[in-house]
Amino acid sequence: MNAAKALFSALLGLCLTLLAAPSDAFPGFLTSKTGAGIKVNSTQIVLMKKANATAVSLMSDYEGALEPFAMVLVVPADVSVEHVTTLKREYIDRVDAVSAPRFHEYWEQDPCDPGPVEQEWQRNMKADASSAFLGGGDMPQSTQKVAKELSLDVKAQQKEGEYTFTLLGKDDSIEAWLKNKGYAVPPGAAQAVAPYLATGLRLLVAQVDTDRIELVGGDRAQLSPIRFWTEQPYESVPERVGLLNSPGAQELLIYVLDPAQRYETKNYKNMFPPTNVGVDFAVKERIGEFYAALDDIMLRKSPGSFFDEYAWPSDGCGQPCATEPLQIAELLSLGGDVFERAVSKQAKNPKPPELTKEEIDAFNAATKDLKPKERKAKAKQAKDDRNTVAARQALLLRHKYVVSRLHYRYDEQTLPRDPQIGAASGAVEGGVAQPKGPNGEASSEVLPAAQNQFQVRYINFHPWVPVIQCQTPERYRWGKAPRDYRGLRKTWIAEDLARKSRTQIKPADMLQTPVPSLGLTGKKATLVTAPTADAGAEAGIAGTTKPVAKCGCSVPGVPARPGLIGALIGLLVLALTARRGARNSRKQYQ
Image 1 (cartoon, helix red, strand yellow):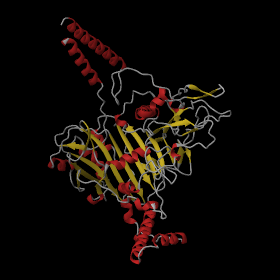
Image 2: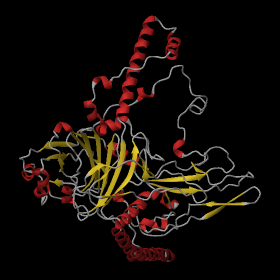
Image 3: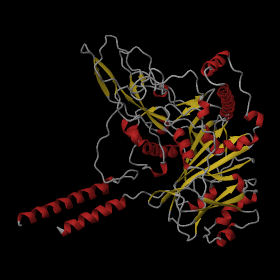
């Protein structure tokens, strides 16, 4: 029995060791005081542009010993310490969630319901007098409407305490500064930054307080975003300096917020990923793994390409939305407050429109029973509210942007030069066409358009399966989930790609729509039958093929190793059997 127990423990440990997640990294110039290795799995950069100003927010994660370390950033020459601040992580997380590739389910509408088809993004989420209020009765009514602008959060939010910033002068040596502060100097650091310093750029050092960073598990931590702003042209993202810390493939996400234009890379190829294509239901909660594997296929077919994954106005969030659109406080925090410095006082506080007769009558009716002093105070409050509403409406109009998302996975060989980011030639539309017919056919083309409406969307279909109760059913009208659907109403998105397995899901097995450009033929969905009241049969696509259950020694986000893992599972079963047999034998002779 002891031998069986030992064998079981050894095999279990070996299995878990083999399943340890592979090391990924992010290009970042980080250095510790002991010289211990630091890994960063991904980075996200938000470039917010307006007129001559650009606000740059950079966020990365961190993997390594929780000891004092510093981050070195290359910044334009006009950046001062006053131009630098720390943001809450949630702001960049929100931009990621709004723009990420998404999974969406379509449901066949009741073939006997003559009403129009409603999509998930068309649902009316507002309560009104016809809605039950807290489970009983109507919403309370009021003769005066409260402007929604009065409830807006319009303050930019910052975070303090995680970093100590130092801006080095043009004559300061980064090696000398790091040594003086007790930090190890990465080999080749001076040579890596020299080309940037020669063009007039400067170095910003952020010393990290490890007691203030947020742990996300083990030796992993999530660093808060660092934001700086400049009035010099910011078109080149100095990524190559970060290769000093790069042990392998790395993820880079660049989001650009511009008042009028979408953005793309100018010195690398741009590629639109497949969008609006049908996929198996198994992709739903594993969209990240599916998209990571598809990303590798796209890179093999078109090496050195940035993937343009999203272009949409900031007051929207795609169809369907994974989360609500970016709020004004978030836009101000990401850089809008910088742009407000150039806005005149008059533009910030426009004169509100004159009151209408209906508004005057409503105010008089609401205050007719008040004492003169109280009525005067009410009038002043109403005037202040109108001024506030006018100012906030003007603020909202000043902060409308086009959100672009660029994604690149690379190593030292596939990043020969810093990416140049610039305005694209025009607006595009794609990933928004609605499916039609029994096969749920929808256009996956990305075409020029008057307004940007492009998203990467993967779709799955639920046909009508109850008995059809009418003589002339209208089939294959695809829309939102039925009212009695009890599943989680969530839009799953591809996020944290650096941590996702890139081998467990095979896009060739999951795609139901052919993608010839990638050599993927697609697999047709399974047909189902919807019985009618007259015993007829109506065929529709299922698109909900359940994944075949497979037994394997694996953990989420880690590639399985079928041959070796299968053998280990067999040995583990033998060990358990031997252990159980020994226990039974001992009981028999007691």
